[in-house]
Image (cartoon, rainbow, N blue to C red; front, side):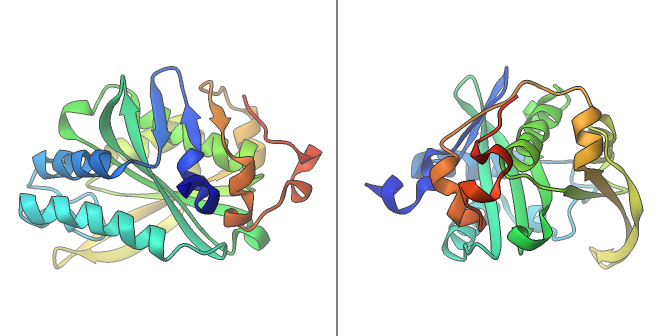
Length: 226
């Protein structure tokens, strides 16, 4: 079975409203169609890579190809977990958590998007909280970092709500124009003092080697849940 060779297909994150997991092929197609329907207003660009400027059909295809690419390029030293987000069984967006040299640095990065019709409903906060729980409680991360362009105030708001603190700025070029990104960082110590969305994680133990970890490398040799 596929799960014997790719245990990540059995990983599940659950919150009161949402389930986050790898999508099936048909669900990946629906995720692409959701992106084709729109992720943000056309007069702004909240992403460093302006993939949403593609025509709808090409945009959908790019979502599918990117998902396959990150699966194919996965290594314990450089991984990106692209989790489809489901509400009541319906695909509503994508939540990504990535890391390089995680076993040494214990630092993750996050990124996400939601279909336009699912925005401003608190889903973005809950799905980020889910992967933060995976990082800190499940993988024993020390830091989670994120960033928000001026054209992405909703991402910045989610980060501040979850306890991130400002960590400097970066200058980029987006659509041929200068853009400022505000870096944000959430430490493990700060995460532990914050109120938490209830999150349960299942199927993590067999995935640990794919993250460069073993059960012996985690405190208590157990998968933490909250």
